[in-house]
Image (cartoon, rainbow, N blue to C red; front, side):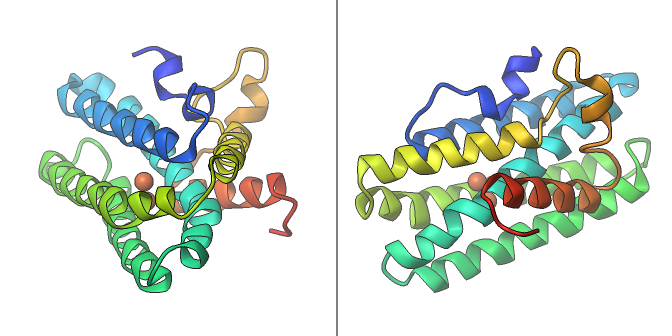
Length: 194
Ligand SMILES: [Fe+2]
Ligand SMILES: [Fe+2]
């Protein structure tokens, strides 16, 4: 897989809904890649999946869900349900990370994680994004897409040429550490205090 395919910040989509749908497809592709990876490549592919999930879910939590809370009918309840799903997936991800890609139950847990993440993405698409598209202007959706991409560029899912040493420190460690780091850089990019 090329770096481009796991670089959500470099996607062409300028409407935030189109952008998030394309990222959901990217996540599905990366699950395929982890599932099909030979044993010696599995850990590396899984790390890329964890980084992509960390920046995607964190960008949604910091930029898209808060907007949906205000913009759509019953927004608070819709967003609370999505956050509960995201947390469930994160807990499983943490357990898998602790056990490592060599663990005997890795494939079974990966299948469970995939089912949870994909069900969550479908719920977002059905209950959140459709309404969000209907309740926002094109300019608002363009603005949100720019925000999501700027945030994701701050928390790259792969090293950029020439900046390896800087990015190496950025998103490494446990999934929780990655998500915390992604949240910090996204809040910085948005001009908020971490
Ligand atoms: Fe999400
Ligand atoms: Fe999502």
